[in-house]
Amino acid sequence: GVMGLSPEEAIWYLFYIFVALLGVRAHRMHQAGRATPAARATGRVPIWISEVVGGRGPATSS
Image 1 (cartoon, one colour):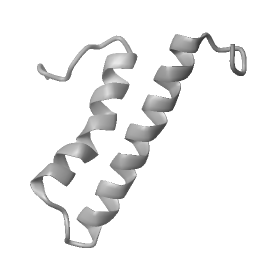
Image 2: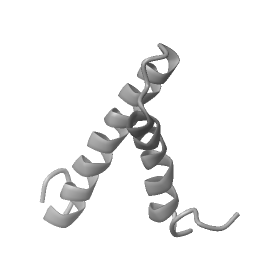
Image 3: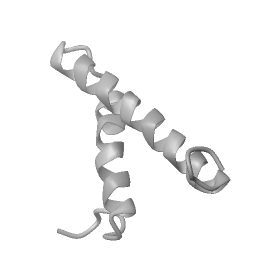
């Protein structure tokens, strides 16, 4: 595998990086006051994914 990762793990790793970069971009747009509702939603995706990966599932309950 790549860097000791299985192909499936490598795909998830790249996907996570891609989504994290989208979140950073959306956050910067939000700080600049140019954020659309879609951009604000995108900014929450990395948080949601980190909770899923952390085994807590989607953040539907507090």
